[in-house]
Amino acid sequence: MRESSPVRFLDDLQSLGERTAPTWNRTWLKSGATLLAAGPANTPMAARWQIGAGKSAAIAYAADVADVVRIADSVAAAPRDLRFNIHWRSVPALDVTVDAVDGGAYLNSRRLTLELLDPASPDRPMSLVISQVGPGRYELHAPPPRSAVIAAVRDAQAGSLSRFAVAGRYAAEFDAIGNDHGRMADIAERSGGAVIEPADTAALPFIHHRQETSLTAWLATAGAAAIAVGLIRWRNG
Image 1 (cartoon, rainbow, N blue to C red):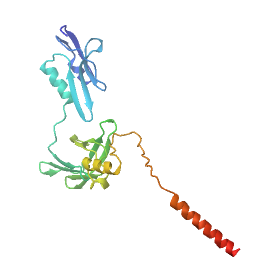
Image 2: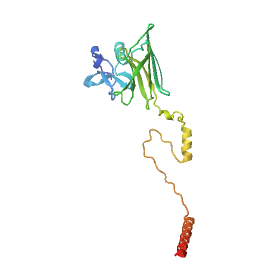
Image 3: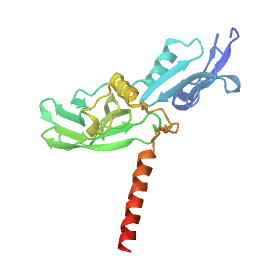
Image 4: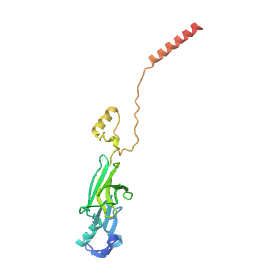
């Protein structure tokens, strides 16, 4: 818009007060987003959106550098704490190792946890304790998740230490099989079956195979046996 508009900051940016935007774009608030600044009739001027463990922000007016910095700071992740060295892997199990050292001194008795966050339900994370196994060393061994999650290592005092994405896996007994889709499709075609993908939720079609069998030989044998039994009974009668 070419006409100017007042901008009123909200939420944790209220301390910025109000200002006038000489130009701005008409926008609509995304579902699940948090309004950070508004114009007349609560028109969105800046907003923050979170998906999973990530955050982003958008500004709809020609903001100066100070406004951009404050809005960016509201979504910026905290810098990594160099006192904690974190290693992880998800195959064959979800293993997390944390070495906590501060200037040559071990950091013991820290309350470390691993939060597993499903992006589809970010308000219900699963929390696992990372236990101390030695001076300054903490470890966690857990089954790999069945669905993709965002993992976050947290310290009760220092907050979030690291985030990483963990892919979903099949149960351990399927590790030796793998996902060779070409081979599975070939086996299914030769056996008259089909490859069922995870997203396939329709009912399985059952194919009834018809096979014709002649009963002449079976009936002739049964008739001869009946005649033989009849003759035996007649002679013994």
